[in-house]
Image (cartoon, rainbow, N blue to C red; front, side, top):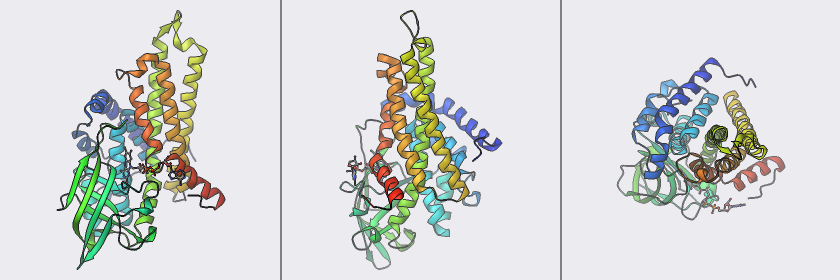
Length: 382
Ligand code: FAD
């Protein structure tokens, strides 16, 4: 793998960095406090093509490779994980699944709008009683003539209350993963109610919702991929999604490094900048190593995807390491800031709160360990 960025990759990274410094960083703390990012950020992301990265131009996307995609997500993660999450889900989970598995009609209906940011998508797998064991989901779609009637509940759904389309995983057959199918459900259908979940530890600017389906009617043409193939589709989609979560975590770690180095240079204790105390340098070095190692794992996955090679285990490794590294980096950065790290005048406390969820969603750290363990041993230990 060539670790030198191409001219196009460097340009897209710079475009994203400038956008984040101008449009995201100055507002992130206020969005976090009021529990809502500025909705116009979606329009701005769309206009820059960031919601259509890697999606073919003929489908309305902005094309490009997965390394560029990860560079943009890293920058967004450095700015505000709430914004990064909007992109990770609407593009990384929903648009990518439609591009990979959608019919011509589904691609034409949703991709141009999702890529332009005039519509948002959400990915609804988790239910109140099935999280890690997603194949145990109980939301059900039953046949009614040529249509399906969907009943059940989803929870913790990123973009859930603001999305225009739900990529929904629901049972259409018997128990187990072979009885699950995927559907694209517009959110303006009768029988769908949505409620925002408040009181989150982090990602407060992001709309996380509960969705309730009460005999929601959709035509068979709303099914994405084959009947009974929904769980496979979810796993394939999440494998790529983990790369984008990991990239966002690299951004958090880099943000912590920048903030901590800057602060250590200007904060004086015992007659010299704290950067001159060896134990502070130890903290800074730990953050730097975590950041660099996480970035290399992310770039490795992006390279495998761009080469068309198997990447799922490497994506689990990158997500596991980068999410835990971001938590460590943010925790170390708070330590460098001392008491000032504990108040939201500085960004490191928010980085810590935002990083924490990355060890939970799209498969907890334990689930990533089980996926890696199964790939190593051939033994399913779930
Ligand atoms: P559980 O599955 O109940 O796990 C609890 C604990 O048990 C964890 O530590 C877990 O690692 C451990 N555990 C479970 N099984 C095993 C095992 N076999 N071996 C060892 N340990 C195990 N979901 C979506 O579908 N779409 C979204 O957009 C989305 N966004 C989210 C946004 C936020 C802010 C949050 C908090 C969650 C989001 N989720 C979303 C849900 C998320 O994916 C789940 O929370 C996650 O999969 C874990 O499920 P759970 O919370 O039910 O925990």
